[in-house]
Image (cartoon, rainbow, N blue to C red):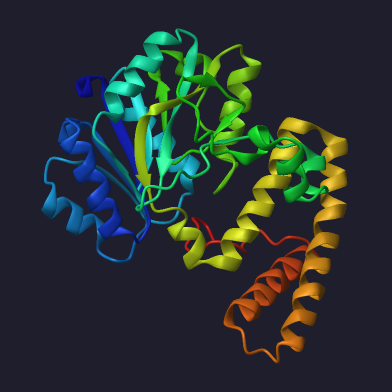
Length: 317
């Protein structure tokens, strides 16, 4: 089964996690020549360390942070196996993952994307699927959406035992059937970080393909290392991608609504957390961090969303 797979791993200053991800792929039987690492301008010696540890690994090194979508597309351009898994560098394949993914592709002949069950290091199920974004999702409270439609917005599908067609997959361990790529197309490189896989799933559905969650394929995922490291920058990238998704997929009116609503929401969040910080005398580090994060997001909106704000090291910035 493993001989049918290439695995693409995007790395940005995360060499220790990337080494573990590669090791898990090799343990599952993927050949080193078909593990493709794209390094996005790391300055922690990642390329040298990976090359020394795994000399047969294919490494494509960018001089700057080209973004997740562009990096994955670089890997897709050189992948030459039936199935290409895009694996986060903070994720590891567990035993039997590739066999389960293969079985799901065989069971769903129109499946173009298959996602694995994601579990954290202590075995708890993480969100694995997501609703396709609609502009009103950003206006209604998330807790209300989960209560009204828990299966649609909950995202975990922890009780699911059979593969199922889903709206969208979480992209931490997502496999594409390479023979359908000419019809599906590559990831949209206008998305720098966040929602690139969501747009891919939306495009797949529009073209009549299936997007399948495969519960027997299990992947351990540490969840959001980059996002935690760059809290304000990653949240700005999400908001930028959310507006881009609205414009490209939902249409002009949803984009206008979100363009007006998102700074209002950021102001409300900043004010609420600022009041909470004052009431707690600034003694709670988590509260201070939340206030700083929402303040940064609000400032980004008020300054007309400068393109150079967000995650560091971007190409051309």
